Length: 373
Ligand code: UDP
Image 1 (cartoon, rainbow, N blue to C red):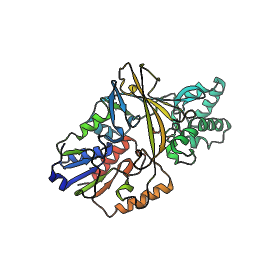
Image 2: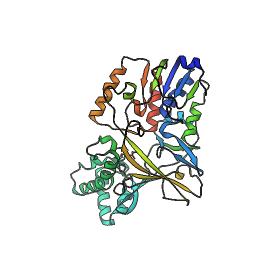
Image 3: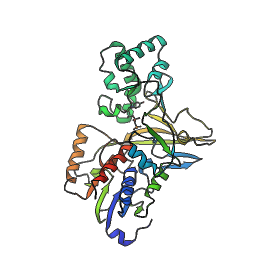
Image 4: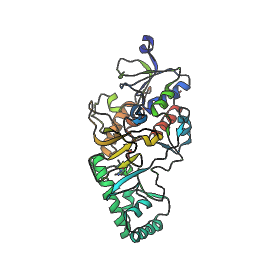
């Protein structure tokens, strides 16, 4: 919608950033009867979950996004704005020339090793941990059993080491353990990437879901509109990076970014699943094939090759905060500046400098709104 002059002069609630965090907060405020203006410097809504249709295929412009949560409140909230395609995410990886399930599980084990070895290791895993148990690779490496040592070293080298070097520029030992812990070894025959009760892709895509969220008489959306210090507001909701709000006075918070090479192929199928990882080969980390998410029917197929790179201000976009002691300390220095500003709220992956999944971003808003009159 258009903003008249009066609304620009003084806004009740100004939200900066129209991604899933900003849009969720806009809707929560609007539902409480608040007038909301939400701005974004980009020319589209939905932030990094933005998607669009091409050749009948819903393509995620900023890489594959799969909604999954065990939080019923989050699921119920999002479900007001979309219907779900019951997609269950499966990822495979090229390991020693075999396409095997990722996270590494018992099926991967049996695909990669002769039966005698696989059976022996499987028994060890079951004896030590039990069935359907998730073990972070850095934990598995600590076991002093020699067969488990062998397995852990194999998985560390073939699945984590080079992928993580590409993704983060550091080894799994150097980065925060929570990052490799997102993809634990799974002692199970369950090939899915997530085991959350609720999983799916919004029918029609994420952009439509966000559009529905913002479709409220109390919400005004302004695109191609960067934040300016001249804007007047009672309350400000900032989902950009917190260092930017404070003009980088202590220096920049580092992020990782991504470059996507999109290719359209003139045939209907590229790979068996939506995402295939290439830990040890090539310079990209993974290839996404988008038609899998909504079972889109098309004679063509669209895929993206994903190349991680450093975030550089003005050159590419922020994707991943980099969790380590130094960066966390820098983030907290910025956060302490925010203490004197009771009418400014920081949240979202960039505002909180946290590696949120989509559901965690929404959960953060559901909590935050409770403290706001
Ligand atoms: N990872 C890896 N090899 C894989 C998959 C994941 O080394 O085949 C590590 C890597 O460090 C990655 C992290 O686990 O950054 C988290 O993976 P996830 O798939 O959760 O990343 P996202 O989808 O959020 O980019």
